[in-house]
Image (cartoon, rainbow, N blue to C red):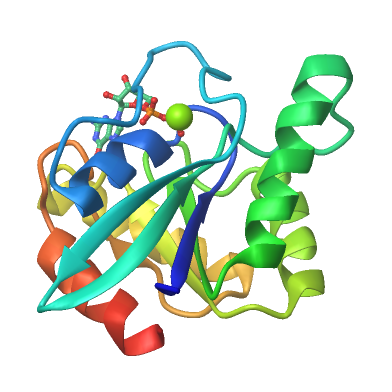
Length: 162
Ligand code: GDP
Ligand code: MG
């Protein structure tokens, strides 16, 4: 079976936009309101002649209840069944308590994690990505999932991690 890349992070950071960018088509649902992707959804992707599966998730939140809890559990299942995790953070907002809680969940999985500094739409915002070093996941990977800025380099990094 093709290796699996799971995309996780809190709601609204741009996970589904990133998934569409990685698969090269608009299949994952992007919404301005959080919590749209309920279950984990898998898509086939290909880059440099290699196939892999990209799994979109509905956003992970600590202490989630009811529907949000079910969504968070699905994200945890995605993490635990993936070969590589893309952990997406909103660079404009900066690292939050929820991001830090998610990092703890990711560490428990012992899976390789690529830290995505999303919404780096321009050079000025990209400068803010240094704040994400504090999450302890190493070098943040600057990306604009919306405009495609940095996506080729990211795909190369994903293949290198698989
Ligand atoms: P998800 O909840 O993490 O899946 O986030 P979505 O992919 O649904 O995106 C949430 C919102 O962020 C949407 O309005 C997107 O258009 C926006 N968004 C996603 N990526 C970027 C980006 O790189 N730059 C900017 N400016 N907005 C983005
Ligand atoms: Mg989504």
